[in-house]
Each structure stands twice: as C-alpha cells, then as structure tokens.
Length: 401
Image (cartoon, rainbow, N blue to C red; front, side):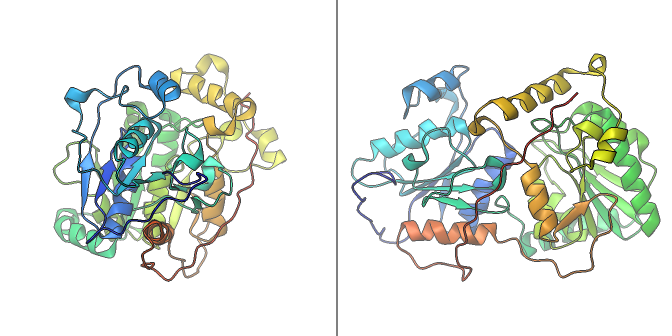
C-alpha cells in the first residue's frame, strides 16, 4: 500500500537486499539521477527501458496505473518476481511504476520518484526533489538543494587516466566548458553560443591554458556551430552522441582546473559543483531574457529582442514564461532558484565574476537520498548527515517584451 494511505503498510525485510528495478526514461538527466541513487545504494539492480506510444500523455492523465502508454514490443518485459523497490523519474514512467506496484499484491513495492510527479504525491513512498519544482513540504518529499549525481573520485580518476595522454598537446591549466540547450523560458541560440565562445576563450587566454569542451544531448546545432566558429583559444571539442564509445565527460571534470557550465542544466551544474572546483555559470539569456537577476538600471539599458527575430525556440520560451505566470506550478519549473542556491553556498558564480577564495562545501544530495531510501526498509542510514528540510520561495519571472 503506497505511502500516505490511512493503513500503514507492512514492512518486509528481504532475505538479502531489496530487489531493485530502475525505470529509465527519455531524458538523459533523469536517467543519470536514477542511476546515481541506485549505484550509491550499493544494491544490485535491473534496468527497464521503454518506448512510448504517441497517446501516452492522455493515458497517463486519464487511466492512472496502466501500461497503455507503452509500446510492449519495443520495451522491457515486466513480470514476476516483482521488485521490492522501484526508482524512477519522469512523467511517462509514473503509470508504469504504479502498475507494477498494483500487480505485486503479495508485498508492498516501494516507489521512489526523482524530480516531480504528476500524480498526487501521496501515491509515492518517496519523492526526491529540488528547488526549481517548488513542491510542498510533505513527510514523503525529500527537498535537496541539487539533483543527484554520479560524480565520484574513482570514476573521474579512471577516465582521466585514459584521456590525459590524448590531451597532452594542449596547454594547461584546462578549463572545462559544458554546452547544454534550451530550457523552459531560456533559449540557447547562436548569439549565446558566440558569446560563450568569446568569454571562454578570453578566460583561457588569461590563464595561458586551454579549453576542454563537450556538448550534450540538448545542444542546438546553431549554438554549437556559432560556438565553434568563434573559439579563439586552444581547445578540444567532444561532440556528444548517444552511442559514443568513450565519452570524456568525467575525465574533463577530473582534469579541469575550473568549469564553465551553461545555466540551463541543473544536473550538469551539480556534477560540476560535486568536483568542488570553481564553477562558472554561463547565462544563455541577455537583458530582458537573462537568467541572472538584473538591476533596474541594467534592465533599462538592456536591448529588447524584437519579435520578428524570434525563432521557434524563442516562441516556445515566451509561451513557457506565460505559463509560469498564469498556470499552475506543477506545469513549470524555475531553475533560477537553484542558481541562487549554488551561488549563495559559494559553489558557483556567474561567468565573468571573480570566484571567491573559499573551501568549497560538498554536494550531499546523494547521501541524503540514500539515507531516506534505506529508511523505507527500516535499515540503518549509510551516511551520518542528518535530514534537513527547507521550503523554497517562489520567484517571479519577468515577462519577455
């Protein structure tokens, strides 16, 4: 019986460790967080992958626990023995997880959802969330400051050993640059790609070093092309592909002295901050479309982006801005809250600002989530960090003009 019902579920203690299923979705960031939690728990797990029908949104909203949104011929089999624990993320996997829980009538299958849910929160045993989703303070919701991540010293060290010889022709120190993509009301367009290339190149030249650049699954071609065209510092550029045989991402995190990340991706910002190196957030917007807070004087001087220059991504960003003002919170997210948290904690600054000379705090989101998952099985916590709760303020978003 799921968390929040009037009758408390019976706690079963598996003979060895819980049987764990990971429900993978279509977003790389979601899948990375699911893997991060599973790997840190230290329990063996089985990965389930799905292909979704075009009608999955309707079936999700109307049918509750169901497999109606899944293409069974192109998805993982789901059959007994059922898991003790499901770790999942993303709207599309919610009805699948709840369907599995419903089939296992002989035991309580615990569902841990990462991010935010579309179904009522009480239908899940644990929700591991972050500030941009602005969820309520409820007993089964763990509020972390940052997303979960897979950055470990061992993983970075092993990847760095493989990649270091391939980068010896580049001058040190290395500065890593991570290119994301469009995010809600913010558009990573060609103009932003050009600005990033010029600022990153200037930073590399000021240190006498080189750039280690990687794109991501969401990087628009126009932004990437503009970035490459305007690079003027020595650089190694890795174009992300889904089936890359040897991705240097963790090697770059290890080898870089400092890291520049576009401000659209909370996962990539978290991974950069987990290294406890200086992290610089690149604002993919400008003026009235900026991510970072602007003074009234800066807003008055800012050039307005004329509507006749809007592309499809700019129109989608404008619609998202309107939905943030007029629609329910569950339909949108405000990533600027996470920016503010990272900056206030000393983990990051905006690109162009001076990084403070401080000892950087660790990112503890994974440890806190592991402890909460273990508590679902009445197991001893794996980490000594006590749970902390906070409620995030809601920030208003300026309407583009």
